[in-house]
Amino acid sequence: MKVSFLTDYRGTLTGERFHMAGSVAEFDDATAAELVKRGRAELVEVEQAEAVSESPDLTSMSVSDLRKLAKAANVDGWKSIRRDALIKALE
Image 1: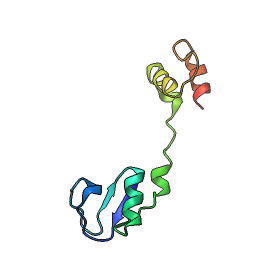
Image 2 (image 1 turned 120 degrees about the vertical axis):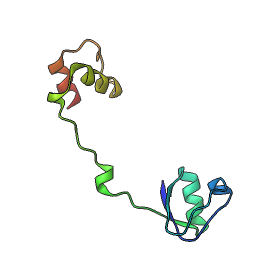
Image 3 (image 1 turned 45 degrees about the horizontal axis):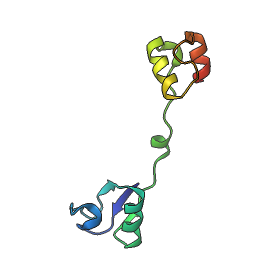
Image 4 (image 1 turned 180 degrees about the vertical axis):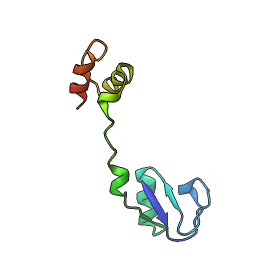
């Protein structure tokens, strides 16, 4: 989670790294929650533009790239599916 520091801070929660008031840093959820609880930082809202990524144009991708995407998406039979079936499975 991203937090914005409200005060200058250096301590065990940040691994003794110094953060100036107003600076933004990313920490695991538990650390971020503890910094907020102690009043040292506030959570930074994630912008919609960051949260939503554009879908790639599958029709212009190579079969090799389509197979990599299919593997990452756990598409069954990704090794042997034809190009048009890969595109359909990934849409």
